[in-house]
Image 1 (cartoon, rainbow, N blue to C red):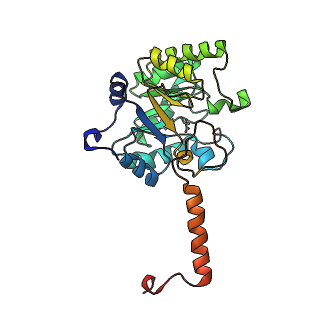
Image 2: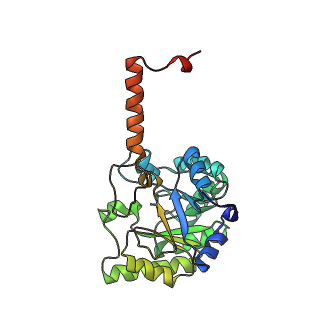
Image 3: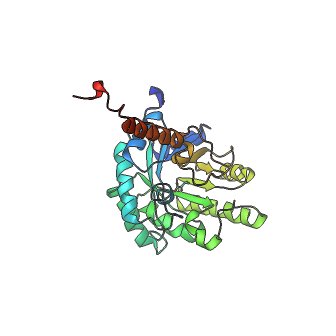
Amino acid sequence: MSSPADSAKVTTATLRAKKAQRQRITALTAYDHLLATLLDRAGVDVLLVGDSVATVVQGRDTTVPVTMDQMVYHCELVGRAAQRALVVGDMPFLSYQVGPEDALRNAGRLLKEGLAEAIKLEGGAPFAATVQRLVDAGIPVMGHLGLTPQSIHQFGSYRARGQDASEQQRIVDDARTLEQAGAFALVLEKVPAALGQQIAEALSIPVIGIGAGPHTDGQILVTHDLLGLFTRFRPRFVRRYAELGTAIEQAVADYCRDVREGSFPAAGESY
Ligand code: KIV
């Protein structure tokens, strides 16, 4: 649980201060009010309403199909739950790729209707003007480099990125470009630990890793992975802190058995 000393609302400035003070940032995904309330109470710094809602909750194969309206809906559920954590809304595929004005309108929806306090988008240099446009309009932007799942159909696989020198250099250059464009933080996904360290050291903004090794300024995981609720696939970077999927199946099997046997409800559970 978070201690009273760190119960103050987390802002983008808090994250910058944490990096300066070498305090690691904690981040997790959230898509609904109930889980977001629990995560917030447990003291996580950042709640990302990720477009991973598509694969984790909607049962889709990729993050591509999730819509802007759906992201606004999930953001609002989480936004109302978060007392302390910074709420970041993910921009879904094609909500920002068309151009900066389109991106501004959609990012604005995540803040106005979805109660997000910042947005995240995938991609580097090609989106620098968009990042700048949003930041100029007062919308904090978190970048996302390395493995960028919205581009799955371009890359054809979810393999680790930054495997050769030229790809590593492009990610470093993109990271610097996003920082210069005004991004307040960067998610770095599935890259070698040494590259994670290099980028965290090169940037003044916080770098939050997912499969980017232990030297980034913070870590993010998909909550349903961490809790053992999502088990369709398990990247190497996931550490399971609970097996709630198994616990739920067992609880439901026990309930079905008790109903079928007639042992539920008991006298004390009846009126
Ligand atoms: O959508 C998401 O959950 C994400 C995280 C994996 C960083 O982008």
